[in-house]
Length: 412
Picture 1 (cartoon, rainbow, N blue to C red):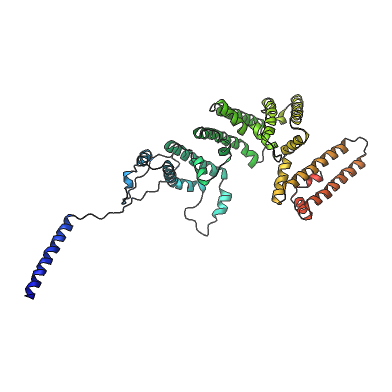
Picture 2 (cartoon, rainbow, N blue to C red):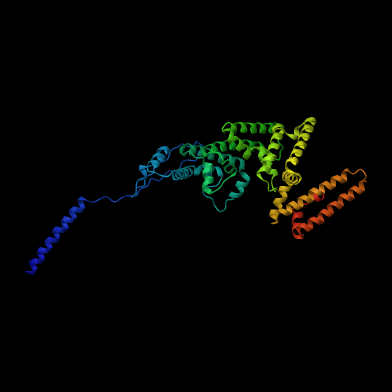
């Protein structure tokens, strides 16, 4: 009886196992595959950027990238938007992808070897055998192409987008923030265009030590006028007024003079109004190339400008403003910063310098002094100023100040 029961149970188990196997076979699912088509590296050429993207396929449990991507960036962006992908994420994806596509061209333009060996003197080669201007031009060309593509695809300026990602606000970003975002980008690009042209003209002065020619100066004035007119055509009257306060040469000159003055808005407006009238007549003229008669008129106008400013500001603020116009004062403040000394010391030293200059001029203009008396008095003035300066800075910082060549004004 026990043996028969065992045989029956064995037969039942075989039947159940067969049924389970049959059900599993008819309801099986294919295992998911993870495949990826490797994106080919584009050849390094100088051809313009084409707005296409190689197709990639990655199958996941969530969704398939192949359902979103196509060979055209525009279609790819449209598909990302159709699934509710945030615009910032779309920008990041497209910018990162375009950076990857253009990486070989960037590497070629930089002059770096793809596979550097330890015995190769690449740093010296880059320093001596590559013209940094040519490298910069190649890089700028790539950046311009990339910038145009990003603007066309996602409607943002690549330069501004990169600054935002790094948490950086450059001069244009800070000073044009009063404009709507789209107009801010348009104005910025106009300013950058003219900046590039101006740098090209001034480069020979910086790199070759050559002075600007008369034609160079005329060209720079023409570019300044063209820039002003082009920007003005993009702004309404209120925007233009704000733009002038932030970006005009007159406003920049006023801010330069206000350095170290702890000025108020009313101080700025008072100086700006007077200076604007002066610049309207003389701002575009080169003082070095004036004929004697024009130069005399210019000097008279400059004297009248100072008289108006003194009347507007009062004696003390006017003195502080003229101090800020002096490049020596800016340099002196920078020196105090490097010496880790307070700026009050810069003001104190600058006053010494101004007093010394005035005293020397008095000696020079004194007709009652002989040549020997004049030389002796000038020498004594320098020695006395040196003593006061040493006391103000202390021996240690005085030595640093002198050794750095900043004290030559005491002996001239």
